[in-house]
Amino acid sequence: MSALTELYGEIAHCQLCELAKYRTKVVPGEGAEDAGIVFIGEAPGWHEDQQGRPFVGPAGLYLDELLASINLKREQVYIANVIKCRPHGNRDPLPTEIHSCRKWLERQIEIICPKMIVTLGRYSMAMFFSGKSISKIHGTAQKRDNVIYYAMYHPAAALHQQSLRRAIEEDMLKIPLLLAEVEGIAEDKPQPQQLTMFE
Ligand code: URA
Image 1 (tube, rainbow, N blue to C red):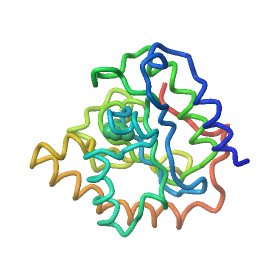
Image 2 (image 1 turned 90 degrees about the vertical axis):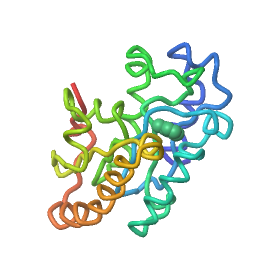
Image 3 (image 1 turned 30 degrees about the vertical axis):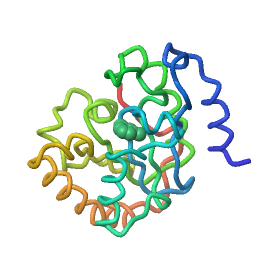
């Protein structure tokens, strides 16, 4: 059994917060265990909760289009969320829920050891770019321990606002160059214990 599959088993039994009571299905994340890029959204919505898969509703279809714009299919990347269960009524996740769920995302990243982490929206941005504003840092990257951290708007927000749509599409197109840069530099991938997430 792969390390991710084993982890999914643990996540499926998670009762660390109230959201466990309301979920239809837990949505751990999906994609290649050796993916070079991990995309991190906020939390499952209705469609995701029904199917147990991340980004399968309208925002997900748009994410697929964005990936296609850089010749990637979702199977070639890894897609996860900050929160693994749907906040009922589509409300924003609470700080306590984010705190409880954080260890799952950390373990996913440790297993995958990606070259690039792309945050989609404010919630995942806050985990890796503490105290920053998305309108200021979207489309910009930070390199730490040979991992590129890159902030983008959330596809759902971009779907509904033309100016954000232009920005997210332009930001997506920068990814291949950034990735090529880090691939050129890093011989040794960061080890799990070196991974520095947000404080
Ligand atoms: N929005 C997210 O942030 N994640 C999903 O999986 C779907 C919509």
